[in-house]
View 1 (cartoon, helix red, strand yellow):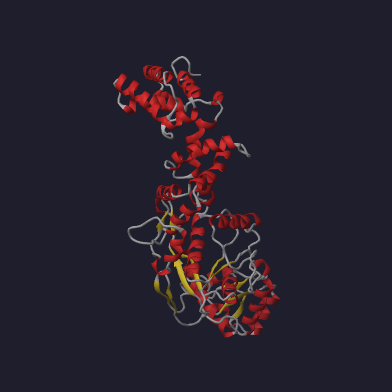
View 2 (cartoon, rainbow, N blue to C red; view 1 turned 135 degrees about the horizontal axis):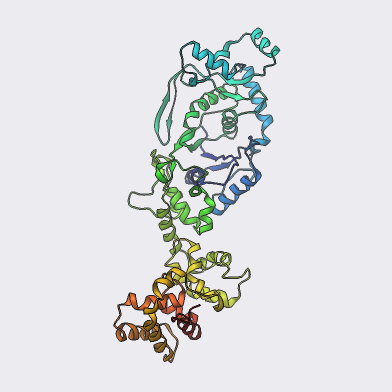
Length: 493
């Protein structure tokens, strides 16, 4: 084996990137970076019916957003290219020919129906699959099948011995001799299958470590057998080390399907998960930096990542925990970084234009520190600050909040607030706070929660908002008093 670690991430461009796929990319990236090695990004796009350019572009978008860079790939180049399997068909055809000539592959003409009938005739379960019947056909028998118009598939001759390896995640694994039927590597029409293309590419690209999902573990014995065959014909120099990563489970302890909305990576980006928080949580799906620590930076992840610390047990995707961890990273952002990252979400909500004015950005910067302490995802900022940016003619408290907090019995609170605030000589946070406490808690004898809830809803339109007094200072005297008056029974629209 070469001394330098060479890992790879080789997805098929089908559908939208999902969290399980990106978790695999993250572990390969962290493993390569931890060991000072290389990450190869390879696209397995030989299935024209399912693969799409749109999906490929989404993969690029997802990896770039998360900062998972690669050293070799379709757009990065490298000495082992091309890195799209659709551009490597001549390579596969040549190696299949060499394997066939060496007797490592053989032509198989049996149909599925014939295999099933032979199994039944021997009292065996047809579900056992192919019975290796065509291994030792004579040239005359093969010619007879061709005369019938049959085209053969090419199958790998599996060795008559146990196939074992020491899995980097699961330890020693062994498949007994005869338990794996000879697999098809090339279809009858000449198209190469994953069983051929994946190991051939790994061999030619000198991949040293294959970290992939647990669902691919049953194919590993076939791949090991093919690596050995490739070594015998001088294509491969070694068999890489394998590590099979645990399933990512969703609700109800079911494997998280790529069709499940919970698995769609872009849903988390659109909600306002940040790169640092999402990568932190994805790393926890099967790995931990320490037993008593859940949050860490990307640099700390790379420094600490060891594949031997990955658990073989399924990992459950917990959205609430992901949000909590993301919130820690949001609060750790530099103030101006937070301001800039939230701007696109305020624009998407219609609160800021495509080209915000300096006045609008200044208003956002003023309240941003108060918002940063209260959100777990960036998208939560827009509802919290809507009251600051919406035109007054469009402002209205949320229906549920108004129904619970602006009932007729709130009128004394609102009138006492208006009277106290109208008398203020200066409109500053401390003065606003003192005036309202004197009027509502001392003057009306109300508990703070009951006293300030109607004021908060009248001012911000919500029961949850940035700090009330600071919000009122930002809104200004005229707007704040106007909203309190509009909230009085009979005035609300």
